[in-house]
Amino acid sequence: QTRAIYHALRMNWSRMDQYFLVNPTLERYDLLRGVEPGSAGLRPMPAGVRTLALKSHGDLAAFDFNAFDHIAPFKDRDYITRRFFRHPIHRYEVHLVLLDDRPACLLVTRIAAHGGRAACRVVDLLGRTDRMDAVAGVLSAMIVRRGCEYADFVCHGLDATAMAEAGFSSVDFESDRVIVPNYFEPFAMRNVPVYCVWDRTDKLTFRQCKADGDQDRPNHFEPSNMAAA
Image (cartoon, rainbow, N blue to C red):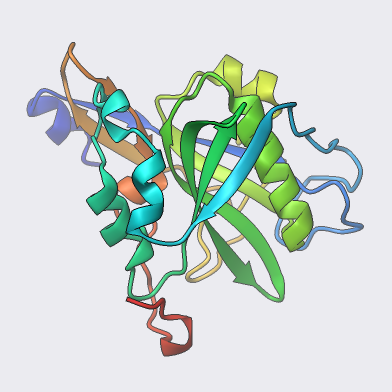
């Protein structure tokens, strides 16, 4: 409905992708629709890949944010600290993915639950995107360990072919044969496309993730879920 306005403002407008990985170890899915148990394989953890769980501002020192200053919007340690470590409601997990012991990317996730079942939502990704097989391996291990039905990633600016080769499936918003819920507050059993806008520029590479806009805002207030400031 607002696309014409953004085009008049000479801005880019696009529908974001929603990629997902299914937990193949479960015997049934209550959140997913159209996915048969055992129809997807577990993504292997590539050799040389490991992760570190980061808990505070100081833990981010190992990651070189300035190496990715060509990516818009630019984020630094203060942003990650304020947006994720100190969020007053949501509990986010920040993971440093290492390739051969070298920091490759920051992966930010949040567990969303409904009806006693859970999904792992990737809300941000900073850093390298040339090894999405490593990210897929990390997420696969995570959802199996946590008992999540699936992991998903709403984003724009990642190469669709590379994502498919890494093992990610893509939501088809023109069909309801397979449903990967996006809304949990309140829960909606339907595919929901998300759109993004950005300034036109030839100098920066645009990458939009779920947490960059308002799509990961809390829609309710539960003190029991409040994160430590």
